[in-house]
Length: 97
Image (cartoon, rainbow, N blue to C red; front, top):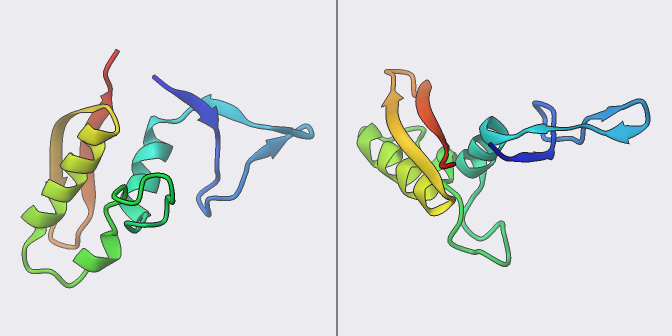
């Protein structure tokens, strides 16, 4: 399980007692990958799902496929991805030990 600097729900740095908060960051990495557009990471321009492009899609399986590919490329073991009727995500994935 990776540890990293923790961001809040608005992707701002969390600070406690004048220091950056560090903690388990799997869920945070997943959120960043899902929301990031391709090209946002200049060193890795193919990284990012770009979830807003799937908002009006009638094919949620394409969204799930892109999430799976990005998570695997990032080193995660993807067990299951479920996408509900309103595009709510239920993801069972973590980094391989």
